[in-house]
Length: 487
Image (cartoon, rainbow, N blue to C red; front, side):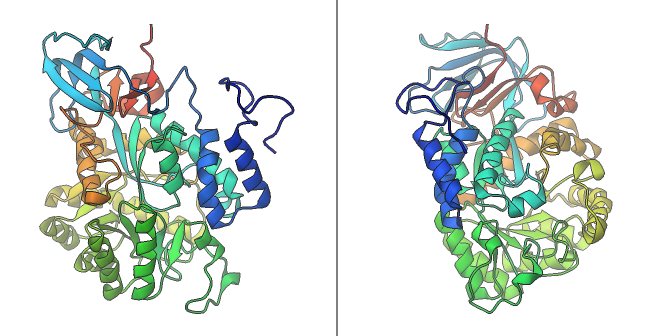
C-alpha cells in the first residue's frame, strides 16, 4: 500500500506526481500496515492528514512560516458580523494573519501589497459551525466504528479541506479525536478550518455515544477500556472520579471545552431520548474540572429534565435541546446559558435511520420549530451548528443547513449567528482558546478569516448554499485558500 517504483525522497513533489516516497508517506504506510492502537492513531495522524490535505497550488497555499504579502481589498461592501446593514465603499487591509485596517475612501496600498478590487461585492467574515465532528462527518457510521484508523484519518482530512472550501473557516468539534488533525492544519501540513476540539465525548454506560457491542459486557469497574474508547471518540465514566479523570485527559490533550453527554441521543440505538445519564453531583465534578482549567462544559441534552440538571450543575452551553419546554427556555435565558441547536427539519438533513433511531429522529424533527420559537421568545443566546454526520453527501449541505434558519430569523440575523455570535460562544474557552484573537468580525485587529461573496447574502441567504459558485475568495488567517479573481 502507498508505494511505487520510482521517485526521490529529497526531490520536489509535483502537485499531481507520486507522493509515496515522501518520508511522512512511508511513515504512514508503516503505521497502517502494522495496525494502529489509539496511541498509534494519535501519533500517526499528522502524517496521514498531510497526505489527504496537501494543498493544490492552483487553489490554496498552506499557512507556511514565510511572510505573506499584505492584501488590500478595495471597493467592498462589508458585512461586519455584528450589524444588520452593509457598509459600502470600504477598504480592508490584511497584513499577516490580521485585519490591519478597515477604512472608507481610497487609501494608498502598501508598496508590496496585492490589491483586490471587490467590484462592489460583499466581503464578510468566514462562517463558523458551532457543532461539528471532524472525524465522523463524512464517514458512514459502520465505517467510522470499524474501519482502519488510517483510512478514517485520511477521510477526515479530505473532509476538512471540503469544509473550508464551503466557507466554514472555523468549527467547534463536539466529540472525536481531532487533536492531531487540528495540529496538522494549524502547522500547514493539511488544509482545513480552525478547530476548537472537545476530544472524546464523556458519557455513561448505555448513554449516547456508548456504541460498544453487547459482547463487550459486562465490564468491571476500573477494567480496561473498550475498543471504542481507544479510538478517542467517547470515554465512558460511571462515577464522579472517573468523569474527572476523563475530563482532565481531554484538557491535557488540548481540549478547548469539555463535551458531556447528559441524556440519550438519536444515533445510539440503545439510549432513549428521555433518559438522563449523569447525576447532578457527577455533572458538577466535570464542571469543576473545566472551571479549574478556565474553560466550560457543553452538555448534550434534549429534554427539560436533562437540560435543567445540566444548568444546575453549572454547564454554560446546551447542545440540541429540541424537546425543551417553555419553563426550560425561560431558565436558560435567565441564567445566560448558550443554546447550540441545529435546524433539523426533515429526512434531507439526516442519513437514513431505522428502528429506535428513526423514531427518535422524528421526535427531533417535530421539536425543532418549537425549540427555535421558544429560544426567540425568551431571548436565549443561540448559536448555529449543523451536526451533520456519517455521510459525505450530507456534509455538502452545511451551508444549506444555515439557510434553514430563514424560518425563524432574517438574513442578517442568520449571518450574525454564524459569524460574530458563534465567535462569542467560542470565546467562552478563555485561555484554552487555541486561536487568541477576534473571530467572526471584520474589524481592525481581528483574525483575517474572510469570504468574498458574488451577490448579497443579506438579501439572498440562499447564496451560502452554493459556495462553489458564490464564494469567490476564501481566506483564513490571511492566506487565500480560494481565489477566483486571479487574472
